[in-house]
Length: 276
Ligand SMILES: [Zn+2]
Image 1: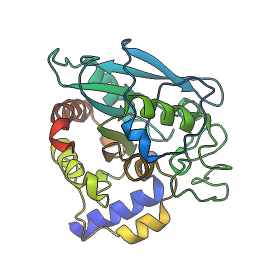
Image 2: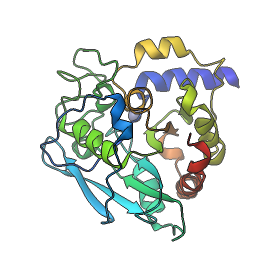
Image 3: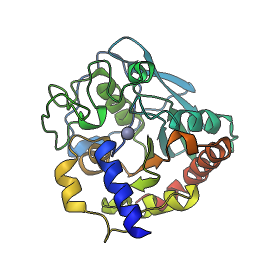
Image 4: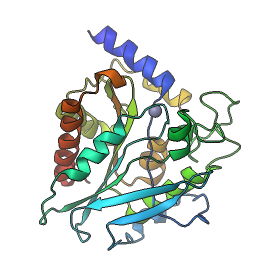
């Protein structure tokens, strides 16, 4: 069973691995160069419950919505989709938005259905320029040729990446859930700061999590460049991060969508436990 899981993880890593997230920001946003002082800057509160994070290359709007009190001291960010060929995180976000969040919640939930609306419309993994957004973040970025893992011309070269980076810098989430497909697991167990969060995500969503011993962390670190995960955890140090690899679409039933949404809400309530 573990062998199967490991193979799944490896296959998924090759296909998808590592999610990222989003942000509210004017289209003039520039690629942020992280500095240690970023985490010391105050969070920018958004009193509105819906924010335009930015726009895609083809001009589609990227929107973030808040649930829970705007004054809540903890923030969870849930990103439904980064790759256009992985659609099932989006109904999870829709379901999440139907769930009631306590007005006394210490955690506010920000959710973005998709940060890649062009890819979603075209049913392509990358954005309209063929860039894999999860290879475009400015951490450990490395140029790779055109193909499904095309890195783009430079770090944060894409409007979608910049939009998410800016939003994240504004809301400074303590925790992120980034939905992908189709590996039926939760990644980022190799990220020590996120390890407990990843395991908790797997438990609540009933998705298998590989053990650190089974994961090929050294190889993954060398292979997966420019990911949202790495930028958020290692460069920014904002908090913990889970890459939620949902099963193939045919297996994501309505019942499972509800389970993933409720698990997301539970994880949100538990964010303070995972915050340093
Ligand atoms: Zn993906």
